[in-house]
Image (cartoon, rainbow, N blue to C red):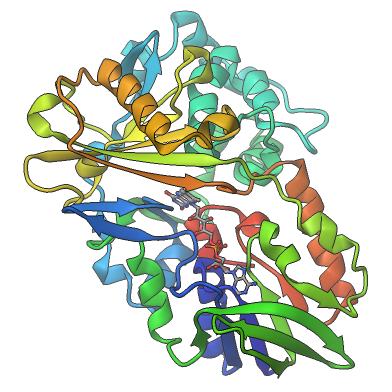
Length: 444
Ligand SMILES: Cc1cc2nc3c(=O)[nH]c(=O)nc-3n(C[C@H](O)[C@H](O)[C@H](O)COP(=O)(O)OP(=O)(O)OC[C@H]3O[C@@H](n4cnc5c(N)ncnc54)[C@H](O)[C@@H]3O)c2cc1C
């Protein structure tokens, strides 16, 4: 298995390609776009640096640090402002700080006294009898109570997956919590005890990072050693099994088609793009329909630039998230120019607001003018803004983030079945490995 075709030059494809190349394999990466990075894209407009996909990379795992070191990205990482440790949510129509210590937990208004007592009783709660396929909502409500579900899990999951806790499966979204409950009964006690274990995959201290020119520097660094291996503007059109090898038909933007022979094919393209390829002579062909159907919701990102003096809120944190019970039209906002330097011109502020997701998919598909006015209206109230934005931009995602839901379990089974029945063919990418960049860098 020496000649390997990798479909897609997003972070998953690039990471797999560089690992395989290091092992001495002959690697070819086909990418339909005219750039690498997939959903990771940064653009500078009028002095504002916008990240259209991932905004931050959490370096918590030792493996993430190693991958960044190996591709030369570690030294270019810039740390988020220390203020980013301060997270906020909306409670009763106002932005309040989330606690960062036990003392601040006791004094923070993010939960009522009843809600805090219920949360602190977590170590007394028994293990689940049926941990398989439990939703995140059921797990949080069972272990931490309804208020923690409404004011912590709900906004947090809207921030990560643009999804509701009711739709997500704990084993898929946060496998570590499922393991903690299984091994230690309590997640609070388990978190404390597991920190001391020698096989802990986490670094002693984590870093929240980006890059001076935005997150796109990450795929650029990964792609540096693969210059000769990547073919841009080249879509894979057909994959056909021929005895012991794989014939891969690709098409350039000019329309010119060529066929290449490989020992192994690894697809890292998103689930919703799999049906753009004709799959020929594949055993268990119907499994491709399952693989093709992971759940994604539309999401819109609204970037607004303001004069610093026009915003009365100090913007002294990561940003804020909005619990669904607060009935606002936005999911949350990143204080982008607080988070990393160079995101806005001097004297200006960049705010990145998320709209839609599972909570309101139709709103995410509205006209740009509606999305901008929705974000403006909510931000003006919450952040006490006096003036109008001096910069605005919208990025719409029709299939934003693959959800770790019941469908993901089916997709994983389908991918395994297809690989087993078709030696040399395998599937990877965020809909199978998990959406976070560390998961994609460790692409399975
Ligand atoms: C809005 C948004 C915000 C996010 N924020 C964060 C964050 O802050 N932190 C974090 O850790 N993660 C975040 N993520 C998740 C993370 O960015 C993604 O999970 C990850 O980048 C996905 O990488 P991938 O390589 O699996 O897929 P992709 O990036 O989708 O790459 C797949 C590639 O395949 C190519 N392709 C498709 N079809 C073909 C074909 N037929 N032939 C050839 N090539 C093809 C595509 O052009 C694409 O380049 C965010 C994601 C989104 C959408």
